Length: 512
Image 1 (tube, one colour):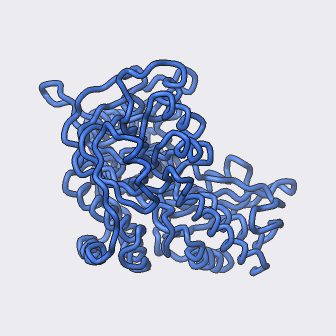
Image 2 (tube, rainbow, N blue to C red):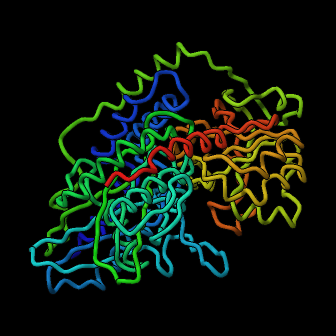
Image 3 (cartoon, helix red, strand yellow):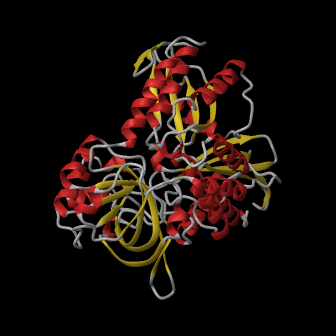
């Protein structure tokens, strides 16, 4: 099958850069639910703009191109070893071409392989069937939403919902709790796949398999169909909203599957997926490896541009305080900022993720960070023919992972502003008040939107940590984010968590 590697490369690129129509329709429907001029509505405008930019640039929708997971069905007699080799080669090529970010890290040494290949990367599951074609489906599920996956072992006590028993109603409570616990850290509004039964491993696998279903399909099991509809309707009453800013659209899809279990075990597993629901498939000729059909595609044109224009009208009529900042930033400037302000950044910012924060706890910074801005971001980077770096995708990563370090590092180095997504916890909030700092929430997944704001890469340090974890020094213009934690003890994230928990409690009584 000499065309197989080429076909796999096309599938990878298309999945990374082009959202399927069922997902686009769900995002447009989410936009229609939000109240005009709200933070959530403006976030959805950024999201729809970003999707269109990814289409036009043929660049990653989100800089976290995730763990490539392939589900492959093959006729009897197909050489699966050769198919794996073709997939590996296509993954390596797509990484070199900047369509995937190098995401495969040795768990013991921390070394990034640089090509997305390594033990367990990518994930490939084979299944034989009796059809005369090859069916290959791919999902790119980012680390931010992967970290919000959750597994319950019933019976179990759940915050806000009480006891979840070993029955359909207990399952309902688990699913509702899973949406609550994700908040905005999984880049809501999101999609969930649910696996009921099995053991710990197969339950999670079943949950992820549900994400290969289309958003608008109908569950053949009547009980599960009713449960899917219930969850989709009521999860949107929690008030978590897009990016966890509060709002009407929290969940865009819920798919549930069930399998048998051991008498002693009752697992409910939830695979949470962000709005950037990157999942496509192809049907291949088993002789040539050519693509004969695309899956999850149809002939409909989903008008994201019109959805964006409608929000733009609301944006123009809404009164939002906008502040322009350029580093070095003073404490006085920070103290003037309040939750809800829009900050537009010009000038320099510096990326820093997990490895950088861990490093800075024990070492000096490679540059003077006093008054500077740290961006929780692991960009997709490419070199041109003259060996100059360019940013291909640069959205925010989930900030809560840096909670053990952030406040201490801000004080140690004089950092005044931190940009990320999903918010941070009480330790960081306390440090913001003591030191005079601010947390700015960028729109998760909007990697093309923010890459367009980056005008030049001024340099890079600590490349030994790999491209996503290195400290990139970026000159930006018009980089906008929302103040969601200020130096006066206010946190939008804590407020939304509290109110959504109160709303969750109304679903405590038995339904099924």
